[in-house]
Length: 316
Image (spheres, rainbow, N blue to C red):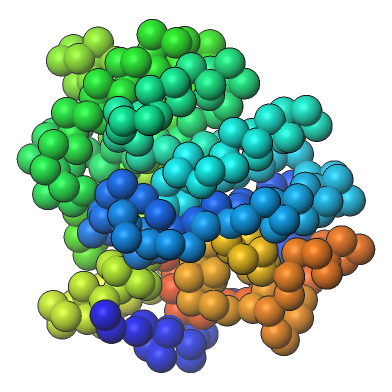
């Protein structure tokens, strides 16, 4: 696999600082039942990295100390961490909002039959990846049969109240080296198509730009498209998006408990801007993150291109 950090480290991206820390985004591990082409984590069925219970308890000590309001769980498939239910229940006990970044197909895997009910019982917000509403495009990006399993999972979630009184957001990623289309217009198309063809309802569509790192970045290099894609991102830069980038209010935690300014910096192993070296979350209990600098590199243009992109979708 080609490394991209050498191509990204020299940057003219503007410096930015943190606002109020509100969300902790925690990667519970790289184990996943899928190996998607656009995955910036390189997750897959053979990965062994999983957050252990001691580190999870360190995370909750940080949540308690910092007054975190939202816990955003990622992977891999975060649900495949054996402590997933413990994490959710501990967060709920504290009144912390839980977001599960779900690939949908995990709900159809053997051994996870009760997962959807567990999520609904604990009012977990679901952000589910569905990179297109057609089977050919989804299966090309995520694997054969993924679209059909995703539809079945969405129908199951609808039956439990998701997309109605429980939050169910879908995520769109472009197929290749291009920006996502307008989020509002694409959401309208998604809602009509999924309702007309499958009777599926969902809350919002989030469009997320593919980042030129890890698996997707390596693919760009292999195809000779890396520089061209970076030109696309830089040409579409919108300064208005700087105020809404996710790193201003989110802190990212890897499976070992080290902290980063965002999920993408985590994958590039770029230390959070408040320290020149990686810091473990257990050593950050008393840190005041507001106004601390954010570590930047050229991939940051992915969050500010066009309508902007973050873990919450388009910024404008």
